[in-house]
Length: 57
Image (cartoon, rainbow, N blue to C red):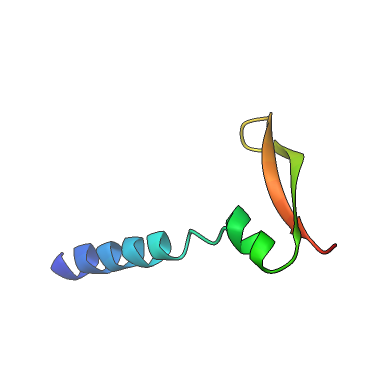
């Protein structure tokens, strides 16, 4: 029982640590790229959301 609780706790920590993979506007501009907003459909909710993308100049 203790092993399963410990393993589930460790897996939750690992997945939470790897989830933030987003780049900020400042990082995008420092690399010499342009910062653009795009309207993207969220398939889970069915609502359009604004997302940003770094593109080359």
